[in-house]
Length: 343
Ligand code: NDP
Image (cartoon, rainbow, N blue to C red; front, side, top):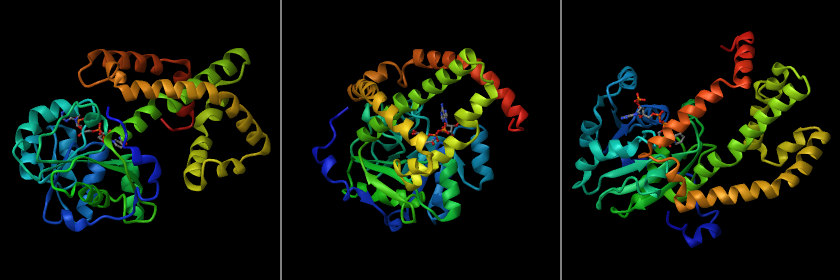
């Protein structure tokens, strides 16, 4: 992974973009490749914004869904052939294979073609190497597909990271802004695009998934085991306390809306005291873990554990998923959620 640009730290405000020029997409055809979580949401919003959208997918239930939603659907190669811009919205570990087989041969000699990614991963680690002459841009939503559609209905935007890996037209960043507007991220209240890079996006994303987020899982599992095994607490009470009540989700929402530290004031003084004193205690160990994992990501070492070519990563994932699904916490969660009518 290449180093971040030196100027990244000092240009905080100028890196925020609030609007783009949809006119740049008007006489173009956009192929949405992959009609999954992101693909469906982005295709629908682009079409509502007056952009000509076609869908490229393998022939399966997602194909049928796209047809039902009123799109022209083609196999991936045919969609790329008919388009000026392709949004690659496939799972990151699948994209390199599909790209090599169905996209690369078709864009090798297409100057002016625009290849747009929703994450930095495959370009940052070199799993996809687009040919000269095409623009390679990133428009990476900080929002799940469902949230994109929800905000679209409400007339609100959402955050995205945008970046350019190859600027053949001299307009690549402008196209990224235009796509960010087309998919409903900017040009609306609550919307912002941060000018970033493929490397920065991959680091941020993978680092969250390697550090604070799994730490939360480990802490919750340990909490559940200790209170139920050592203190005789009922599993139902423990699971409600941890996440099932929705309180955690509300705290997350408050963090996003009023700020990380401001939301603390919504909690009791006892809670504030315990949060802040314990956070100090955990900081050193957390920082050590974050630094270690960041180096693994930055150096590319992480791709020896998980990458498109690595079958062992998938075997490990499947095994761990099976273990998680059979855990005591999962078993009690299932009982609780059935009793609550959530399943
Ligand atoms: P999904 O898993 O929801 O869907 C991707 C699409 O790829 C589906 O249409 C799927 O069809 C298709 N697909 C899967 N396997 C193959 C295959 N072997 N050959 C051809 N097509 C295949 O992906 P996401 O929408 O979650 O992710 C797309 C991109 O968006 C990724 O780069 C991701 O990092 C990024 N992103 C995702 C976010 C999210 O919230 N999920 C948030 C921000 C960015 P089928 O399954 O039927 O085969």
